[in-house]
Image (tube, rainbow, N blue to C red):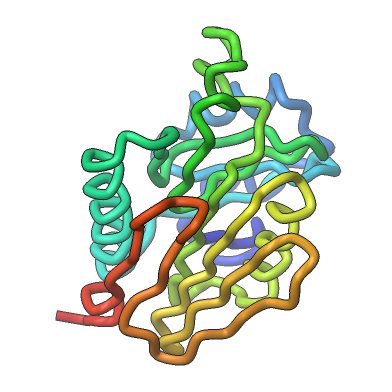
Length: 203
């Protein structure tokens, strides 16, 4: 759920709209502490991206997504799962926050306690983005390719507006699923199959 700084300005503090980059990682952490109600990201060139609070329906869909991932994790205890508020420092320097993510246990365990407390310097092995009505599909597509280029093995871009799921893998063409009932993360996440009925629903 990513938006440009120039969009939806009425929901963004004026001082952020006029903020000029590049923003350093330390400055970014200070902004995150100051503006806790906003989701912030940082591009590899230091450009700040501001995401106002999501609409209620998108929040409902995000809850269902992370709940299903959490349910799978409780059963399998495989790797480490993360929700919508988690930021990761990618190898290219960008700080990105997918709507759901999974990291291999050995990658997570290789980090220090301090690294885990901050924006962990790793790319998720599995990253999911959930499109909201205000999101640019093109920008989300570029974000998914960024995950792939920085070490992710699997990515899903879920578009409830068109009832499509875009599946990304490194060095492969994007697979487009039209109105699927489920989508599987096998073999990376063995047994994890996302049921899309609640995500497609507006009730």
